[in-house]
Image 1 (cartoon, rainbow over the protein chains, first blue to last red):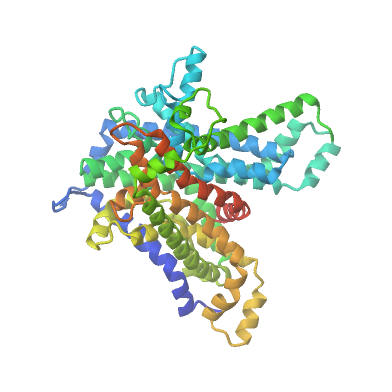
Image 2 (image 1 turned 90 degrees about the vertical axis):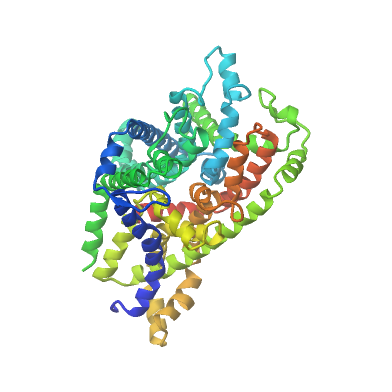
Length: 290
Length: 276
């Protein structure tokens, strides 16, 4: 095998340069920014960890934090349950399989903006069909623009709708990869469908389930557009999530230090979430690198 | 094996529910964009109406710029896809064929970087982009979108190139080909499948992205999603018909694209998620 050469460095460079200049260096700069107090047209002033103290004692931060934790946990686990259910349903055989998969995948192609248009229309308190159906059934309507809990619920629904295809595809492919002989063997041993699921399907799908849950945690944690487009974090900052909080602090209140501190707290949280995964990857990569 | 009737009925019901859940909101918007105003708000929604293009004409009159915003979206999407796919292919080949401490370290760095949320980097990039006079240009969005997908792209390309026999590289080396010639003449033509798989993700992401477009564009480089979001926030109330026309133009091409690229999407997702 040939040694690493100048040509190889040049070939890896575009990718590494983009990552370094657009993400890595700015992220480092954000750390420096988080240790300073600064705003538009004002020289940064060193304040140490004061911004972090300020952020961590801001009730709006904790509201955003709590909202984020609630939303991502609902979103990730509902997606997992639904994705697993639909994957198993599809494995059991469906008519027009390719078309059906295409239909289930369709929301993957939809932008957050378009999804908000759809769901706002269906959920509109006066003209929306969901509200009218609820009213016809004598149920209270969903006041997502007024009641924070309703707003967050709609954000969850929207997010699940957009990302179910991702979870579904990962789990469906993983289920298809389970060798059929195992099911034949289980059947010969007289396993019930539940035992089959519990003893064959689930154990073999665990890696895929962990990966899909982890990826969804990391990406759901960044949730911004759905919230911004639906409620802008309102009413009165009650439905903010961390990314919206960061945006507001930076671009509305011009508190760059606080905003940067929030950013770094988000980076650290993401890394902690993914620590187990990073360790696995690290071990595998450096083991192969002999 | 025949299943009992009750089980078949339940499966059928579950299948119907998932189809309605996935497709109904999309169909509703597309259908409503062709409805005359009085039919848009009919409850329960009607699927029988005399189709009209009035909403599209309204869109043309009220938001004449929307069509150039669609063109902006297309330029940025194609640009970002080209940058991401080409750079990922070059890097993917190196990671597939060669090993060294430095390379392993850089591959790990690539995965690690994916953990940084995009909103975090907007903070320093906003003044930097202004200083470089790149704000409100296609280029800034092309670079941003490409960057956020080169990690996944490289993983996908590495997985695909791993399946191309090394003998092809070796034969070319014997014929005196340089590394560049191997990648460009030998690998590129046979890696098309992987390149499409890597490209699909950037393409969908760049066409739909909101956050960066919202922060880095103001007039000239505005993309379609941004303008649709402005329509939903119009002060004089939402004109649903016009909004549905714009939304349909934004989503229909990409929905069809994803449906056609199904195979590549699935291949890419599995390669990218399980391997990287």
